[in-house]
Length: 359
Ligand code: SF4
Image 1 (cartoon, helix red, strand yellow):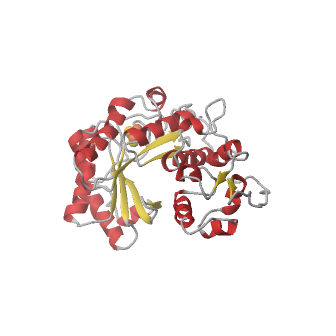
Image 2 (cartoon, rainbow, N blue to C red; image 1 turned 120 degrees about the vertical axis):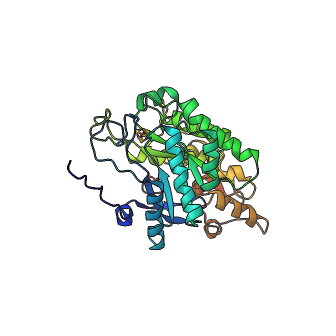
Image 3 (cartoon, helix red, strand yellow; image 1 turned 90 degrees about the vertical axis):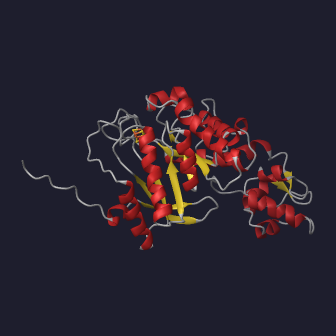
């Protein structure tokens, strides 16, 4: 019998290419290692490069191996945090156990106190979710599609309600059971692969913000992968992804409802204009907002005024009336963008019309 050559030993340099510059909750940027415990998977999601039966060389880490490699990257100053996911191998609970084991080694054996984002597998058990939440700064359950019908086109073995949404509900229930420092939760949608409209995606996003305390939804535009059932499906334009992010922030941080967003007859957002600007052009040009008396909600409707700007306006108004665009500028407001939609002490401010559309 010939001797079997051992698989090549992975080094931390093998992982260094998976470092991303990521924005954390709160706005800080860190170098984040995004990796999977295994690229083997027993499922067959139609869009996915890691689906079962696709012919490519798979890689698998043991929990202690991946922890050691990450800590080496961390000690070299290359990675500050880790985003850990996995293909499903040996069932969801076993896969989830290995993700939890990796995070446990990092926290307990290696003493790592930095950022850990753990993926919750479809079908993970409630106790596993609690264990993951004790270790992570953020957990995520990827819905991939906005409803059962759309998901069936992408991932025949995944079930929105039982497998995925129920996990997000448990996360929220665990957070409410005991006051503790629990992690935030997120989800991700694949955009443009299942024929879904923007209104479907954003209706589900709004539901998740309100019903299960979702911190944010990520929108990942579909890009076809060779040797998958969707390899001939057209890619989704980057601008669609951008408009969905802008709109989801309007829902989460600006008090907008889905019905207020400027969808076309097909339920999609216009690609050629910022959704807040489109809303303001319809509603504020003839009914501008008086900056000196408007409440926070109305200030947030004005293009160029964000949550921080609105707070600063409310604070500044206690000292005296705001009369000039330059005063708004000093508060960090994009004054030229706000100008067509506001009154300053009863007067429309003078402003130049933009020469090109503002995105
Ligand atoms: S379960 Fe995840 S890794 Fe597996 S095929 Fe589906 S999307 Fe890909």
